Structures are given as structure tokens and as C-alpha cells.
Length: 246
Ligand SMILES: Nc1ncnc2c1ncn2[C@@H]1O[C@H](COP(=O)(O)OP(=O)(O)O)[C@@H](O)[C@H]1O
Ligand SMILES: [Mg+2]
Image (cartoon, rainbow, N blue to C red):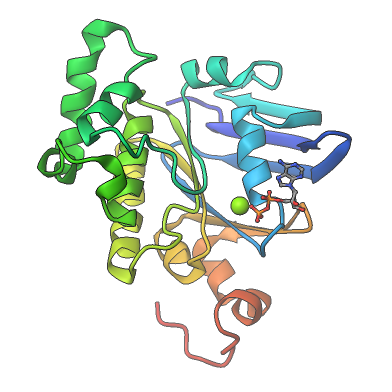
């Protein structure tokens, strides 16, 4: 077991152009855990995930993966070190088949590793096999989300960043995406997920971080954050007197 957290952020400032959006953000994510990041629209959640993957400007602060500083590395190098990122919204090749999308997801792997990686993700998500020859753009939103997550899992990330995986999905598919996140963490991956389904996310997560105006507002065990009156008021329908259903 590594003595380090999987990911550590220290006083991170990140954003676009000359404007930091994420301010003074610090946290530590232990290995094989699920952390959910919640917060209103525009709070800076996507910007924070992009900063961890290296696709937005870092102004200052440290990003430490497995005890090593990675903030000076580009996204391709961070991918090689074990960070996988599934961005918000659709990010597959809609006019290619599921099979072709999955093969595209292998492009950073050596040729000899493709077969095993494809077998691994198709066993994990049998849905991919059943839709193998279909055009990705013809799958349901939930199926496309599974495909996009699988494309990233082909690279065997140790840290998986998921931006709003359940957005726009039916309640049943949202529940399935939460199961997927749990399965992934149970396989040893550290998951950092941005979620608009706060109730569902808090039920499957170990830790919750609440962001407001680019800053960390609250962090704690998901079960405690669920009971915080401010969180119940702002994100869980405001029924703060409701008995906690644990
Ligand atoms: N590409 C961009 N260029 C400039 N500003 C951006 C860009 N993307 C997002 N922002 C700004 O950053 C802030 C946070 O956005 P974002 O991280 O997407 O929030 P969230 O994911 O919490 O809804 C918003 O004010 C938004 O306008
Ligand atoms: Mg976002």
C-alpha cells in the first residue's frame, strides 16, 4: 500500500486566460475511494477536474499524484501516469460504431495490450458487446456514458475524473452509473466525480466536497455532508426536519 494519498491538491489556483476560477483549493483523496464534488452551476467543478487533468491554466499550487508533483506535466503525460478523464457532455465518435470507439480508446496502449484491455472493459460492461456494431450516436444517453467511461478505462487509470456522468439520464440509468462508479472504485481506482444528482452521489460516495464560487466550502464524509442543514437546504430539497434515512 502506498503511504501517500492517490491525489493531493495543495493551494491550487486554476482557470482561463488571466482569470483564476478555482481558488486556493486543497484536498487529499485516498486510494480506491469515491469523492463527489457538488456545487451550483458555475462553481468551478469542471474547471477543477480540467486542472487535475492539465487542460486549463494552473496559476499556482501543487498537484501531487502518488506522492509525485505532476503540475508541470501536460495531459498526455498525466494520462500515462494514470489519470483518466471523462469530460462533461458527449465525448464519443457518434458516427463510428461502438467497436470503432473502443478501438479508438486503445490508441495510447501498445498494440499487444489492446486485446486484453478490450476484453476487460467488455466483461465489465456487457452492454458494449450487445451494441458492438451499432453507431455510438444511436445509443441512449446512458449507454453512451457507459461507452465513454469504458473508453477511458481501457487505459487502466488509477485516478478517474468523471464530470456529470448521470446528467440527462433516466433515473434507472443514473442508478446504473452510480453502480458503475462503485464497481470502478471497488477495483482499486480512485474516483473523483462531479454530480448534479446530489442525493444519489452522496449515497455511493465516501467523501463529499462542496464548492462555491471556485472555493472549497465544505468537505467531509458523505454521510455527514448529507446531514448538514446547509446542504440539505441548498441541494437536497430543503426538508431539513426530515428523518435521516440511513
Ligand atoms: N473555456 C472557458 N473560458 C473562460 N471561462 C470559462 C470557460 N469555461 C468555464 N468558464 C467559467 O468558469 C466558471 C466555472 O465554470 P465551470 O468550471 O464550468 O463550473 P461548473 O462545472 O461548476 O458548472 C464559470 O464562470 C464559467 O463561465
Ligand atoms: Mg461543469
